[in-house]
Image 1 (spheres, rainbow, N blue to C red):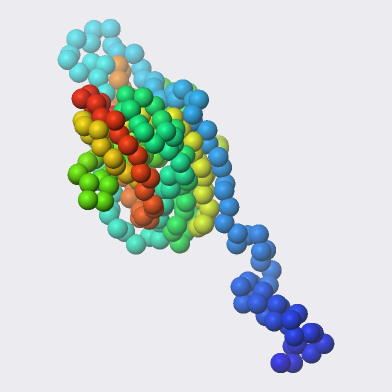
Image 2 (image 1 turned 135 degrees about the vertical axis):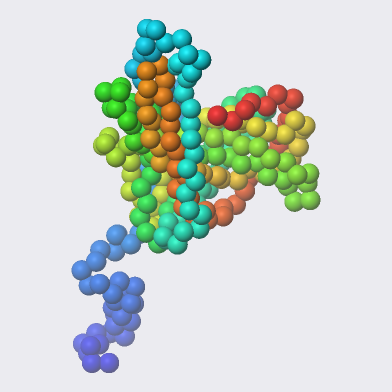
Length: 253
């Protein structure tokens, strides 16, 4: 091995190991190390999500004056674009949960795909809207949720709790680019929106939805077009919980 002349055997082996792991001679070792990009604290945040619109016309008497609406445009499922996300539940506190009370959850949102992916990271949707309340507003939203599933050999149960993050390409700092292997952490106080009506042992699993939205303001209201972007979902471990049960269940918003 001519290139090892003058080197000890151990040094030679180490040199070849580094070249094998990092074949691009100019690359930095730190560039290949996965890392946390941002920590977001929602536990004490009163999220601002109300969007502005022009006032209704003075002579507006129709039933739809001041109303808003939403339309969902489904994306393409399982498109092979290399994007994938894993949502880990790092902790849930407490694990004995009264559905009418908030609980603390910490999420780890990891890019498990082959390409970079851009995610919204702002707690406040209202702050991202253009100053002109008549202008269409383009933004992204990321739902992070605790989906309820059954224990092994337990009764079939379902439900979910969730929080949202928002971002707009027009607002610096509200979107973040995650390269493969990078992640963000999000800590939030949240409540269940739907849950079983009887006490049950169950499991929480990390869930997400990534949406592209356009809000079209109209006098007295507006409507929102929403497109589901469907990155691939990487399975993650679930967390055991004890739901105390309640006869009341909120409708998911």
